Image 1 (tube, helix red, strand yellow):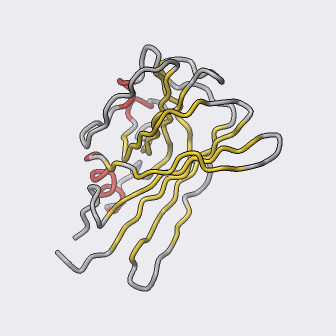
Image 2 (cartoon, rainbow, N blue to C red):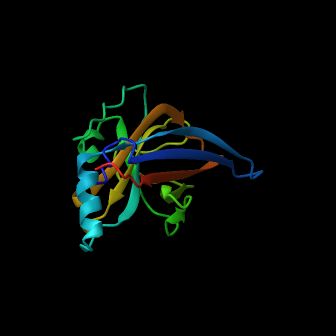
Image 3 (cartoon, rainbow, N blue to C red):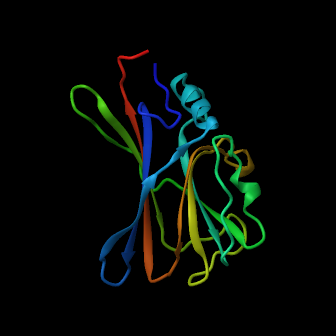
Length: 187
């Protein structure tokens, strides 16, 4: 039995790195766990069954242009697009690389696919306009593109929120997202 709904059998992490475009200096600015949503369990089941359009393809980056309180994310909170309006907006960024796989020990205690995107010169996908020096990133989401022509059909696998991070175009950002799967002998 594999229960990935945020327990010991399935958990994840996000890491955000800030890279100085002039010097190449890199520093980690965010590291925290993520929340796998109910829709994430559906995505995983469809992917295992080989259903088309069921692989992770994008990340959303939620931001605000003032000090708005980000919306609270719950397990059934699967439609962030409708939450990004007014002074909030989002970036929709395709995965930069083929997901990597970090293998674990012989007990398979911690197999981790890692998804990555880079944010260099961002353009808003919806909501407010993303602006260097004004936009504060507060959330990222791991997403499946169900239709290449209609991003309103995207399905969210997982979301994570953090203390807002002011975006500065002197820096590029690299976002990494890992989902750890743990084998369990207990049904």
